[in-house]
Amino acid sequence: MISFKPKQVTKKLLATLPERARDVLTKRYGLDADGEKHTLESIGQTYGITRERVRQIENHGIASIQKSELYEEYVPIFDELTRIINELGGGLIAEQALLEEITKDQKLRNHIYFLLVVGQPFYRAKENTGYAHRWYTEREVAQTVEKALKNLYKSIKKEDLVSEEEILNRFRDELIDIADRQDEQVLKRWLTISKQIDRNPLGEWGDAGSPNVRVKGIRDYAYLVVKRHGSPMHFREVAEAIHQLFGKKAHTATTHNELIKDERFVLVGRGLYALTEWGYSAGVVKEVLQEVLQKYGPMTREEIIDRVRKERYVKDNTIIVNLQDNNLFKRLPNGAYMVIE
Image 1 (cartoon, rainbow, N blue to C red):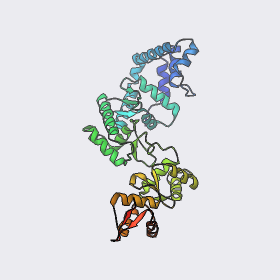
Image 2 (cartoon, rainbow, N blue to C red):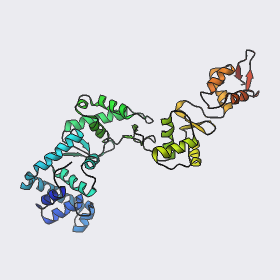
Image 3 (cartoon, rainbow, N blue to C red):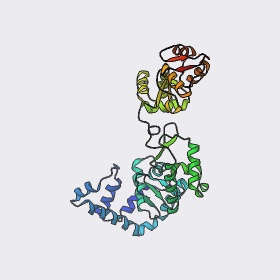
């Protein structure tokens, strides 16, 4: 990914500074062998100065490096980093994504990060509630992408889960002209800049704060399993699927208990659970019968069976037996049934 040795470059750049400034930058950016980053406060305590004074030394040290003759010798290295940012992110990329692409060595990442800070072609936008730390070389691209991500988030409802193909299509619509200049990988990297949009373990995208995306426990895993299945599942099947899809051990009894407590699920048969969002009603068969007849009025036995089976996975005989409760239902002369008020 890179043709130069970051540790050697930072060592030579730091050598242009006085000892204290060199030590402050080394500690602040974790450029020592242990890779540990120190706070302004801890460095201040070491030297007996305020954290603000440490910040001043840090800023002055960076400016001194940028003005040094040695900096000019390393312009090709900064050009190489510029090329990497442009190739990976079209001029804009999340900080974590950039560092992960360059190296898996955390200590080495500290050196790359320092070079980005020192390098004058690069701009860093700090994280906020909407976006992660990011680096860019083209301000116009950064502004366009951030606006597109904001609009994309607004278009997603809290409970929405959309495929990667759909989220990319929506994103392209928001990006207008610049989307045509970038490939799919760049668009995916731009999506990682948003802290409000994320994907779940099944690769579906949605609101990052939704339990459908930020999966925390058995209930959330169970929801994704049943939604992916597309029809009611027995709690034993749900437990097995959680293990198969996510590698999470889910005991059948625990899974059953979690499904009972969660309003996203409704029991539609013996041990069978559906999603409430599919339109299934809660309650025993008699309650469903009452609800159906109150909603649609008198119906024949066949019509009732057809309607109830859309709400419950039960046998026809079970529906017929429950219809015989004379305290709740009345059979009319034409053979239809109605609820007794």
